[in-house]
Length: 123
Image (cartoon, rainbow, N blue to C red):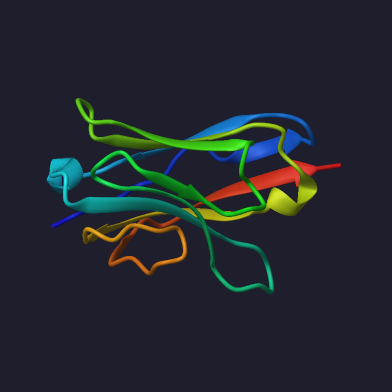
């Protein structure tokens, strides 16, 4: 069973950077998994931020394109989200997610979820 645990959240000032990490139980090593990051701000719905397909393809929400980078260390089974030039509107709980599916897009729903890590960006 896939188990995901996020870390790396925290409080930063606008313009700062954070890197979120999400090690998994190892099942997502297989190339047919789509790995994603979602976020949910208070009072808002869950939003897809970035996705990484088994073929290495990536998709990003327009709001983070050029600032966030999704990547994976396959040797360590760790998914990352590098977040640069952070803005107050990036404040949210961030979730790592995985689904065994060839189609991979940041707006597509996932099957497995982590518990979330809080990111707070102050002006």
